[in-house]
Image (cartoon, rainbow, N blue to C red; front, side, top):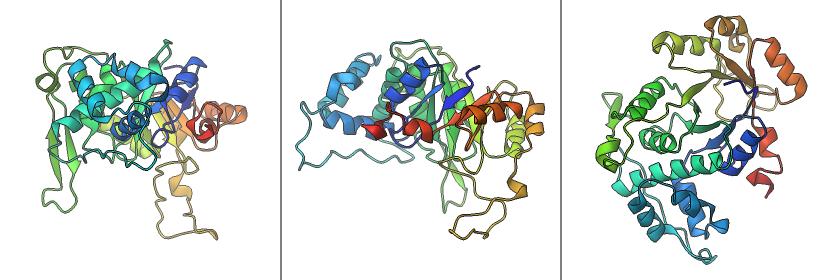
Length: 320
């Protein structure tokens, strides 16, 4: 991936399909946030799906019977009354309900499909690793929509390449989920897309590139050592001033006069180590300017990841 700027994944619907689509058309790697995608889709359908964009995307979902069930349950023509509560979405568990799995697959498909609509530029999808249970379903939906990259952080993402490989080859993805208080420490959740969705599920899909988000060269080096060659197509290195789910300082309990944690020498990234890995990388955290881009490239990066500057752009949902 040779684009020098990545528009980062932000929040629930801040990195919307429209923002990612617009960025990709402009030569940036557009990233659509699909964290909580099932809730975003349900919310928008109950608001009447202004412009019909989400119903249009659902019409391209390759399992029309699922589309029909979702629309019958959640779509409200003209939008719900102001004093009416939104219908609730079930919570994920280690044995999710069938309708929740359908909704997760369809929702990630829809958001990625809209981000890719009308152009041939690359689109990445962003999830938070620590929201673990839904990954095998959401990534199935994103892959069905032809997503080009998966960008993930907020946890150690060593399991993601295997999940992607299983989904695109017609296999059965699984994920080890950390269970607090469990004597075993984790439980495994598995999924058979072909059994669940039927014979119409493709036997082969395009394998998205994987761009893990890390905060240190140590973690990048660890991932390269533990994963098979070719698992990672690039790293996003988020420095302490990057917005979002930042790694805490290695030195605990030290704060400045405003109460913010203090990062020190142990938190500095050894860019020479990153360069030696031979894998492209982008740098995030106060690099969102022409000078910042040049500074990142001087460190050996392909370019930068930027978030806040795109959140404040006129094409962002924040500005509407």
